[in-house]
Image 1 (tube, helix red, strand yellow):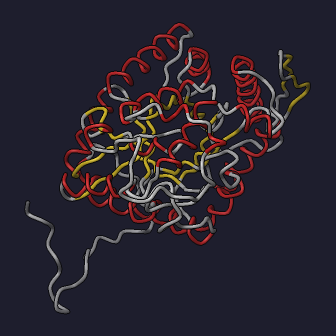
Image 2: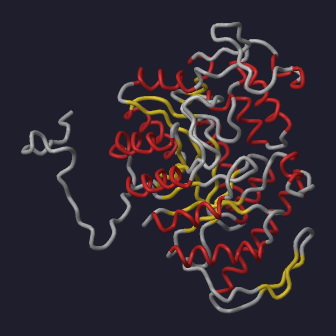
Image 3: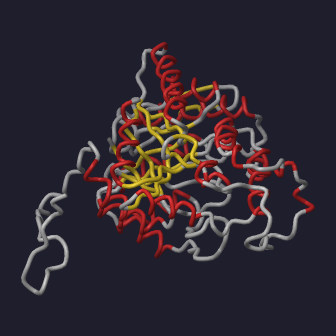
Amino acid sequence: MQIFWFIPTHGDSRYLGTAEGAREVSHDYLKQVAVAADTLGYEGVLIPTGRSCEDPWVVAASLLPVTKNLKFLVAVRPGLHQPSLAARMAATFDRLSGGRLLVNLVTGGDQTELEGDGVYLDHAQRYEQSAEFIRIWCEILARSHTGESFDYEGKHLSVTGARLLYPPVQKPYPSVYFGGSSPAAHELAAEQVDTYLTWGEPPAEVAKKVADVREKAARHGRTVNFGIRLHVIVRETDDEAWRAAESLISRLDDDTVVRAQAVFSRMDSEGQRRMAALHAGARKAPTLGTDVSSLPPEGALTPRGGPSAFSRTREDLEISPNLWAGVGLVRGGAGTALVGDAKTVAARIEEYAALGLDTFVLSGYPHLEEAYRFAELVFPLLSRKARAKLAGHSLSGPFGEIVANEYVPRQSQS
C-alpha cells in the first residue's frame, strides 16, 4: 500500500466555499506541506492541474530542493503540451530529482476551460488525442535509453525522428497514472497506463470499475495497478470526526453551492457527473436549475440561520459507511471524504485495498495539519510498506517531549 498526500496549489481552506480561515498559495506554505509529507513518510504528492491551479511542473521543480525522498505526481495535458516536449521535461525532472517523478495523464473535462487553453476537441476526440499523446511520450522515453528515434503518424498527433539525448533515471520511463470513468477512459487505461485512479465512490462501484479496466487490460495482455483519490477527516473519536466534517461546510451558503454545481453540470466529464450524483440526495429543492445570472454577486452570503434549499446533515451526505460527499458540494473532481476515528478510517482503506487498490492519494483541510494528523493516527494501523530511511540516518528516539527534564514518554498501551 502506497499513501500519497496533496499539494494545494489552488489555495487551502478551513471552511469550504469561503475565505474565512483560508490560506493563499505561497511557496512558503506549499513548501511546508511538501516537507511535512516528506518527513512523515508519505510516498509522494499529487500536484493538481487546471486553470484554478499554479502550474504543476514549476511547483514540483521548486519543491525538489526542500525534499529528500518525496515523489511528485505531475500532470501532462494533451493539447497543452506536445508529447516530445513533455518527454523532455519528464526526463529532465527525473534525472535532476534522482528518479522521483510520476506522471499523471489528464485529458480534461471542462470544455469552457479547455477552449480557453486553445483545445477545441470534443470528449471522444480528446481521448483519441490522449491515447496518441501517451503512446508517443512513452516511446520517446523508452527509446532514449538506446539512443533510438521514433516516428509516428496519428489522427491528432505526429512526430518524425523524435529523440531524447538524456534518458530518464527510471526505466523505461516514469510510471503513468490516469483517471477517467467513461468507456473511452477505461480503454485508454487498459491499453497504456500503469496505474488507474478512481475518485472516491462507494466500494461496490469502485469494484465494478476495477473489474472493467482489469478485464480490458487482460485483452491487451497487460496488467494495471489501481488507486483511489480521497479526502480524509480523521479524529480520535467518530463524534469528533463527524463534527469536523460538519464544520468544514458550516460557512457554506446556498448561492455558492448553486454556482459551483452550475459549473460542474456544464462539464462533459463522466467522473464529474458521477461525483455530482453522489450528493444529489442532499438537495431539498430543484435549486440547481436556477439561472446563475439571477443570483446575487459572488461573495454575497445567505444569512446564517436563513432558509436553505440544501440539507447538509450526515444522513444526507453519508453515501456509504463513513464515505461523505460534502466536499463535492463545491469542489470539482474528488468530492468525497472518509470520516471517522483512526481505526474506522483504516478499516475503510483496507476495504478498498481488498478490491485491488494499492495507491491512496489523500488530502484534508487544511492540508498541513491534516497531513500530520492522518500520519500520526492512521499510518500505524495500515498494512503499508514503510518507506526506506535515508542511508546514514538511524535516529531511533526518544520520541515526544521529555517529561520533567528526565522521563522519556512511553508508547500508548491501549
